Length: 241
Length: 241
DNA sequence: CGTTGGTTTGATTAATGTCAACGCACGTGG
DNA sequence: CCACGTGCGTTGACATTAATCAAACCAACG
Image 1: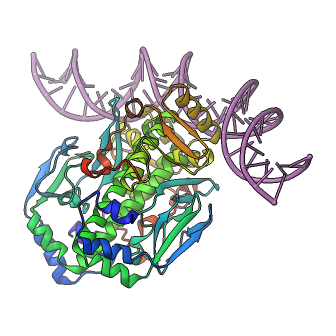
Image 2: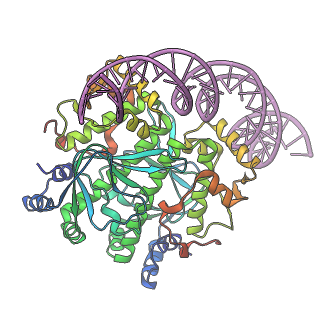
Image 3: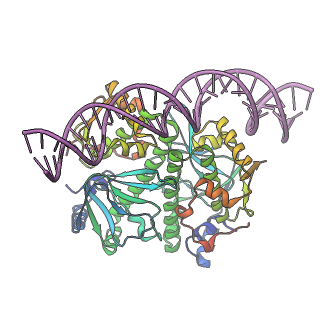
């Protein structure tokens, strides 16, 4: 049930004690409306934030005022686990949809990191985040607009499955085309046309904030998606909530 | 003298004992010619690799055969510190110039991570790597060609300074325009034209494998460079070898 | 029923890629 | 010492992708 535990078990099964510990972390839950900042660039938050429900993102605003989204944060993802070490955030975090966010005080984080299995799994998770960043870099540099979106959707499907939030080849995607544009480095207009192309190819449908992948195999092939950077072990992929 | 120690001290000064320990790591040095793979995607190297001299890079080859460079590895940078945890590399590492690479066996790495100050500094370094990846993402998504190159050069200057390899506002940059193209997601032709534009603006000169920044202030402004993502403390920036 | 936020469409423009050729410096072997 | 090859940088002409601007449309919601 706990999305964090589910995600960490993609790396390695946890003991019941560890699972219970993670459940115990979920005490201080805060509702965050859609499109509101959770942490701003330059801040140094006191508590660590964990997404329990909804979509959030890391982003930066460039000098000319354009926003770029650098990562999606799904249920089970930490926003700022590292913050204790650095003087300040070098980017911001904002909700995309309505979110439920857990705030965890530093001493509980320390307790968590003293549990070896959890600490290792969290380290794995940051390596996956880094791999994801690298793959997004490749996308921006080498894939054209529809390929970029297709690749993103392939990735999100696996990540949503990993936390039990996919239904078959589809999942809730509560974001706008403008947000996709800010993610893929495209204009909203071009995102729209690219989505139409993907639809026309019979690869997917995106409406009512839900993405339905109609032909997963072809979508993977079309976008050149290789899931190795997510470092999932096949056994732990899940297909249902 | 030890580039790794210099770099880690950008986070926090180290004890003499820690510095000595890091010096003791440099036993098994290997010469690597330019443009040769150090670690390939899919491998799982036994030893950890540390760059002591020269330029290397992380890269991926896309399905259609194009290469994308996702990070530069300078003296003092680890190639694959994390590798113990993951089953396999999700990207490759190759030298750009001739390099000197240290190979460190896993038990020495373990010893290293048992030294709290060093472990913390290494964790800081991986956070900086992640921040750098995010900034490159922003570059690809929002900056035009000459801005991208200018931004990259600003970053490299600070990184080279941090390990004592810059002379004033200039440093050795032993890479070709084609490699810059594979970094910035541009064609070599366009890199060439963009460099000419930067030169024409009197911002910099790049010849004989050396980059001379002629007007640092304007270059920073031109590229919208904000060094916060490198998390350097001013005090530790160095300007000479 | 009007307003609002998001999506869709068309026309035009700007940035960058591609292809092809040429030049230049350097190193090598005759 | 010269001739040649090779790798890299440079240039020009042209094609393509995606951005921009502006307007229309649509559905949800008060």
